[in-house]
Image (cartoon, helix red, strand yellow):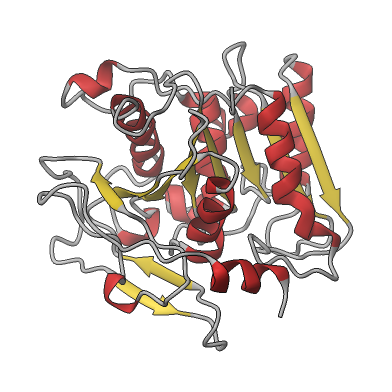
Length: 330
């Protein structure tokens, strides 16, 4: 039994509940496995709902992709009620992380790229919020922006709830995987862009993360190195020069881009490692603090799998060290 499995089987069960009667429950709450990380609450992003849904009858679909009964690798699509699953730290340091799972803009893999990381970071005093965001391929009028809009709103709502969860609103970071890494990098570089009409007082708060960690991220829109599903998912075809300039994170770095932590496997055949190295070089060119860890093996999507025979299993501790150095824990 590897370290990942042991930590999950021994972790205390947190009963899933909603933050208030009006909040939408996290997906698949009826199938919580004893010992598996589970949120204590949820926070809806948009209390009056969202516009622009192409398929009004869209339903959430949850699939289990693991064949091991002791391990869960669930994924969900059809998210029409974007929300955050809340994982409060038992001994909070005041730091918080917004966690954005990946899934190629088709799915949200919320276990090994969401709940398991939240459970791990909770042990370091970091309260976590796992984002169930709108997926470009579910069909939205503004599909290139909807996930970044949800991420902006999520950051503002975390800050609005800072007192409730014993958080310092100045110490809220973001971490995301693969396509979620694109959203993470987009939030880090486009946090100040007015992408939606404010709906309440939370939207007066800052969406800038205190640090960002795109993990094996979809990032570039350069056809030579881009994940081949990015442009079709976001734009319906090849990206134009104007779309690259507007949406590619490496084209939108400025002085307010926060410190960045990056990790990727050199043998990733789904999202080329150049997505990370190009972003790293662009950050360095703008004088932004960046820490980069590249592993020889690991492929794509290793998340919190923690295979002890693979060096990549140490990346969460490397991230915690970086987060501490950047003041996330106070």
